[in-house]
Length: 124
Image (tube, rainbow, N blue to C red; front, side, top):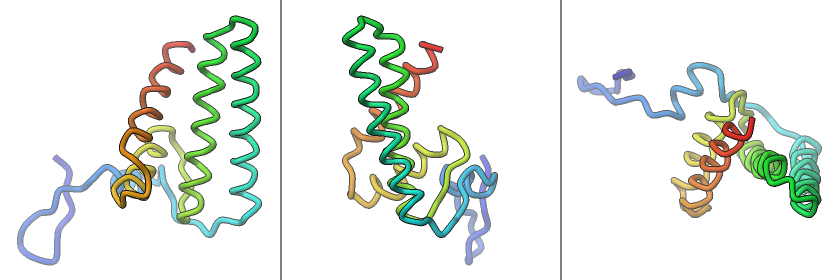
């Protein structure tokens, strides 16, 4: 198990968020309103496209588009807390650390995003 040294003689296990930071798969930034707005716009567009794909009975493509709507929504939230993700997995980790752990979002949100990520992988 990876760990970091604490301020006492014991060893503190490194959590996934810390690992993502250490690996630079999550980086601290100063986001702009435009960056966040762009992600929200992308999320809305992908959701609209997912709806259209469903109307055409293309559930495979709709699942990919729906995932990306969720991805961009999560990315906007993480940006709002001053972080940028560089991996889909670490985006979920950041969402859990910054919003679910603090109870600003329900645990189901992170679980649903992870489930949809798995569905997207299967669709690809």
